[in-house]
Length: 309
Image (cartoon, rainbow, N blue to C red; front, side):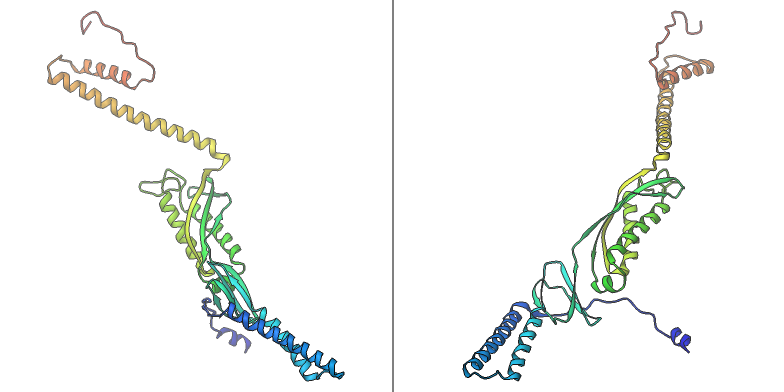
């Protein structure tokens, strides 16, 4: 029977914040101080009257004045203050009573447990994490997350220690992000961690918001603050980047040289400067490419004879 009852229980849904209004603190302070002072005066007058009449004070009135003094002291404990962008979560005998968000001096039931929570934006400066990217290369990555509490009830009752929850989920999201993208040199139109900073940050913010919504947290910004290859492969990757840069530069040089040679041959032919057979054209192309593509300074040899001798 117990098993059947357990199976038919409805799942517990997320908590929802309820805003409550409380009494003005200054008005209640006047009321409570008046009650306290009135009770003290009443007690003193009873003791003075009893001393003058040389009779014991009335027990009931004496107990009543003492109880009123105690009541005034308890009521004074209900006062609290709130700064801008702060809230108080009110819990009465284990039950959520509501949340106060209005700044100022307030009074509420003194038996309410009043838990303070900040609604201000906060920074989570993540530590450097060593993870593998999409291609399996070990990298170091760190992020900064700007977040704030939106729903106080979810922050207090749906997760345990919401600040720790934000930290752990942020680290998990960063690890998942690093495994979803390559560090650099992706395929055509592929977003990488190094080149697609804006897209990667937007992806991280969306994933963090999905993870932290359970804690009533809003992610206002998330961005990478550190991105590098792990030390054990950093030197090898640097050499690879240098080699790729050299290859890319050579490709541009060769492309430019071929264009210049082609332009030179066309100009010579169009202006009828000189007529070259295929063998001489090949020799001229070879010489021009050596001059244009060579790294060292070229020293030409002047031919004092004819073109063909």
